[in-house]
Image (tube, rainbow, N blue to C red):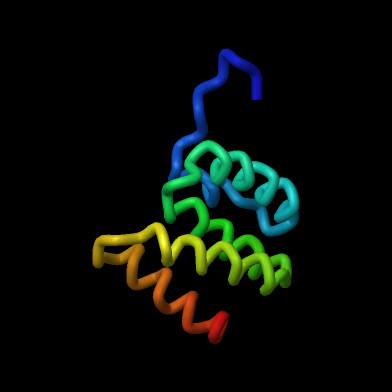
Length: 90
């Protein structure tokens, strides 16, 4: 990312994801997560990519961190809770 480029939006991890290019989507999402370290949304989205790439360990690490960051009830909170349940106990 050059200095002239804008910071990626927190909800851009899953934008234009091609199922045949999941590693590239993960690289893009890694940049989004790095740009928004205190936002649960990119971690929740990266959980999906890690799951599709069959990396449950990394997926569960992200969703546990997202669960710590999320504070308000709502759709994102509910999604994180369901995904956290799929990971079992820490």
